[in-house]
Image (cartoon, rainbow, N blue to C red):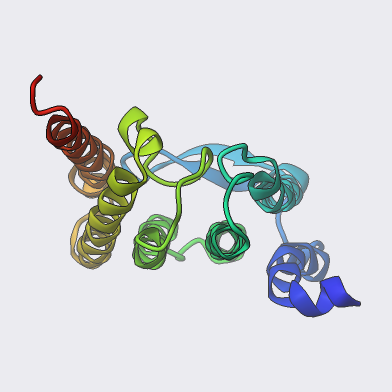
Length: 227
């Protein structure tokens, strides 16, 4: 009962695809699109089990894994109770966001299977953009750990570098998320990946990594002025 009260929203998100599958099972076709390429074209088909049940089970596994990681993270073991609560809280939010994203994708696959005019590619890009925006808002609050965030050798080595890098990375994720959201409404589907998703991923990966390296170099230079 305590778990139900504490995790009711997460449980609701996880059971939604299974409920949708039960309600729509007889209405879903035997085979329908389950994968789209970088140009927004269907390049993979599957049945009800592979298209709905399998990703719903994966979503459940992801939730369990993300719930377990803060407990086994060696970097968190030496933290005070307040910091442990902070890390667990941000992980919980990240878990909710990621599982919500996957649940929405599963429901969108069902909607596309029933109504082929449903724009699956535009929906997926918009959902990805919203995920970046929400996660970006919490990046600056995330404390050092081995499993989530901008984990470069320099952020893991210095708490100061970690915090400054995640503050910048959070702003970057939010900004790129809004940019991607705008692009999802105006770009043709065939340009989503090359002009939208790929540049955003590159920016989010490279800029925080380079920034953390520069911060670490500057920090070490201040601590060892003779070198």
